Length: 363
Image 1 (cartoon, one colour):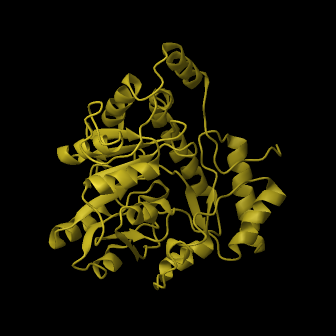
Image 2 (cartoon, one colour):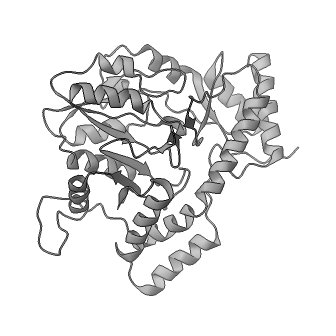
Image 3 (cartoon, rainbow, N blue to C red):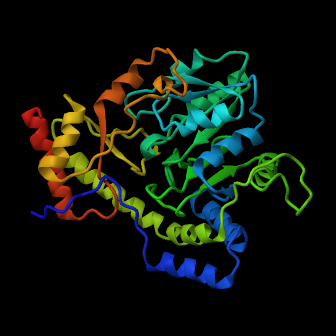
């Protein structure tokens, strides 16, 4: 058995990406330009059934600018999960609005519609579910809540490139959606984000806000940011976009193998009508999660990720006192196993052996 370390995540960048970057370097057109425009159109065509997209320099910038373009600001509240990366709540706070933390459901670790319904107030502007780990949130339920209360619906799709629910791609349900293109995501541009929207005015404002408030040089319409994506990053993203479908199928095949062979742990559930893209393959263990992670690494050279050990509402940056029992339970008991496309059969066998042995031993 090979004892090479199996990382929890492994970005894949090959010769085609290098050649694409070299072509941009040779062109001398490094900043936002034709490569970015082409990437936006191709991302829309491949992953979003043609919904408009706007490229930015990070996923967090995408959330921030999307919220601003949707009219979120001081005095507003946006309901978000606490069990997610801090960027979700940070983006709300950066607009001057207040993130209101809701609990998750434990089947898919996504925002719980029932808990959200009890948090809606006259200040609530919108609801922002996260399609966590690559599994779609319950968008039909959130759509009903939004319609009943006159709210906006936003999507944090940072981890969910290609996921669908009821045949509809994530990123097509809300006023806007954000996809992260960070190196460890299912596809990358090196760094960057993509924002999708079906609202022409939101799209116009996104394009203004990412470029110092202007579409034509020196004609600044609003106060904006420098959140542009470069042609260099877009060139990487365009190549990755041609590969992400095959990579997703490999992730799903790896997940099926793990589903069928793991024993003594809770494996990921998939909702009816949902297509999970397995950004993470997240399991629950019955005892000592942190010891389990350490033993995987030390005894079997298998990496594992813990996402997210400190819920957002308990971070020093927010320091709230909400009672979110499902969030607390998940934060203490879940870990994510390698599921990335670089795994081979021997890697998968070692992961299964390690997890089953440790689960049985109570390590």
